Length: 243
Ligand code: BTN
Image (cartoon, rainbow, N blue to C red; front, side, top):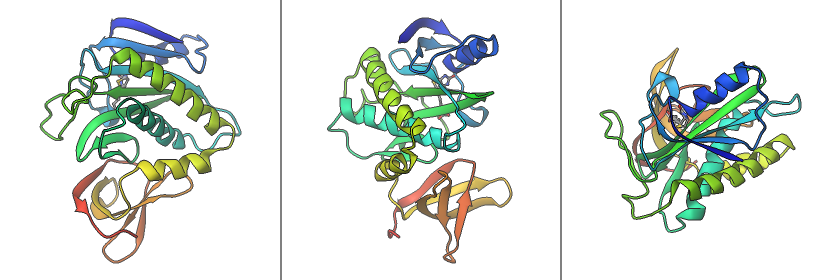
């Protein structure tokens, strides 16, 4: 079920408040806003409001048998990628960037924010369907500017179905297959990237995929492979040699 609201501060915030108030929010339920006055991005950033864009959140309830919760971020990215490609099959070069951005080339089309409350994870997804913000620190894209007309409600229906399917598969032991599917839609291994690491500062290396727990792997200049557990990966150049 998709609940539509005209304007709220943040769909993630609203679902967290409902959960915090003791409401049982069922899996498969989405909260979608026409406008967000205080949209939240990763790492404390702001997510720009954009009428006509998709801005929505849903809930996954963690079970003892689930893979690590961090892998859910990748599953959400996969569902978002599948949804965009289903509605814009001619779109070129749509890639997942760890942990869960959607890029067209080097420009950001969509972002995903997971926020946890007890055993519930709120998954919030923002997709630039018709407009993209001008940001000083990163280039952004919208599907409309790329020539694809997709209504917010068509996207919401597609995403709700695909996320439901992916989350069910995640619950029922298919993370290894979902991981493989994520990798086929991700930046190619060998792509030169940098990451800001809390302990080591900025690290440059070649993207070397993800491990079984969804942790990003970076091949350094000396050949060592570094596991990246948190942070943002940025592309620093074009595709280098694969590995
Ligand atoms: C990112 O920084 O890339 C994550 C952006 C996530 C934005 C979405 S829009 C719907 C949901 N509600 C929010 O406040 N944020 C997420």
